[in-house]
Length: 246
Image (tube, rainbow, N blue to C red):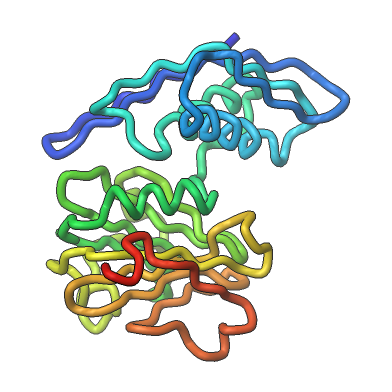
């Protein structure tokens, strides 16, 4: 039995979730949530466990306890705590992020109305950025990481520069820098060739225009207003979370 307690507090935000799991060998992967939680938290626990098991041998994960708070637990917190608990039980790889469309949509809903205070980009040998962190007011920074055709979101703060990788505030002529100071008024997820399974990108609608960001074949896609036409066979933009009226 392993318990992971996610607790991070800053002057602007706080995250909390505590998840206990039991992991046992099995002939096929199975996740069972016996803890008493609502459907959203249950879904996050299941998805977090399955993400942790995706590159591991088949196992049965039983989520026996989930502790949250009404104020400090946000979208992705139970997911991350569950994934980390399972990884600790397996002594496996570290947390990466989430790409489930429903979870990403929920995060967008949480961020609508918030101002983008800053953007951090990480570059390798001056190329990229292959990773970016969006710093919205009243919220934990969210990292955007491309993995193949998947865009992963992780509530985290930027990692420091290392070797030939340079991390720092985005500055012009970077596309991302042009949206610093803008307020997010709406957003939509972009699905890739895997359909509804994972998020491939985002359309972030600010009061100064639309930012399109995503990952395709390990390549970073950044555009203003609309996605490049060449991507239309691969991407499908979903309805905005605020709907036609904004």
